[in-house]
Length: 229
Image 1 (cartoon, helix red, strand yellow):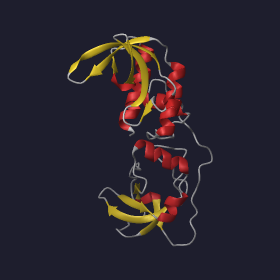
Image 2 (cartoon, helix red, strand yellow):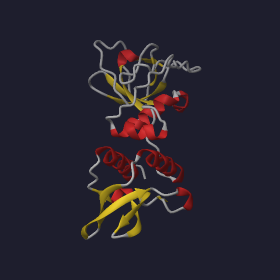
Image 3 (cartoon, rainbow, N blue to C red):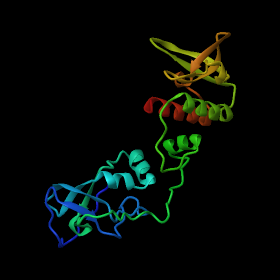
């Protein structure tokens, strides 16, 4: 999780094992729409620059706003602990938690120039959401999106292991309902003609697609499929 910048002249010195709470009014540095006030935890590491690593209590973790959890998952941040300065903390005297919640969530617009944002658009997600894992339902959503946005026919080359690529003409994606056009090993499959024969090819094996828009759609699908299996 993010780090708060150290402040001068810490008012209180804490030690490893101390129970602490975050002072009300403190906002996350990366996400200023997210307050941290009232979060409770234990000091697990003392740094020499007036900073402390605080591990949040289970009660605090259960109370954190779900959007904040999504953002941490998306950015690969550690949700369970945080770096904070002494002026950001106070002794935990016990009693019920009084955790501040955001009054308004600021969602960063999706960018068509960002590959992961383009994939979020496929699934109707926001910038706060992590990309979904590969399964039958997400593959079907991606298949439907590609079927609407790819322009057929188009020429490409099929990558062939240990052989030169083969020229193919892609004519469509077919019907996923027949159980043949989606594959959790290869992703979305397409129908193509190769040497006068109808063949089924994984989109991820297509190369040398001249049309930039089509190539971008195929590259986005391959990026998602290869990294979220």
